[in-house]
Image (cartoon, rainbow, N blue to C red; front, side, top):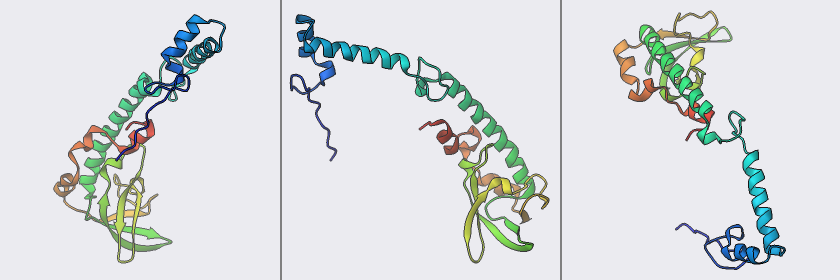
Length: 197
């Protein structure tokens, strides 16, 4: 059960409104323009006017709107989603060429020793053009997540990378693992970056 507190006015002690919106206090202020109620109503009006003009968007820092209605945020978010979708299309083509997906065997180099792991999971929705932890590897002893960028999927070489695909899976199997909404560019990572729920 959720408890919902009833608002009670500190001026007239009735429920349903607070002191700032009290109709009795406002009528008392109109009757006696030099009294306490009039001064209190005037201070509420002054504070509201100053607070309203001083507000600014937490994203673009311009005044006159908030983050929820910020056009710059909407444009930037849409542009990042488009870049993410384009990146994902290109990445999928390279993943299909190299056979990189869940079930692929990966050779890793750690202090000049090679070991084998397999890709146990890919967090598809967190793969973005900005990077993320999204690949999970397992071997006989451990399971861990690593960044997608650690794999040089395009050239499949060891030059600057510690991971190399030792035995890939079929392109059809790679494509079947991709969620339908992946090409939309949506990502929890981007939602968090822009504060979108």
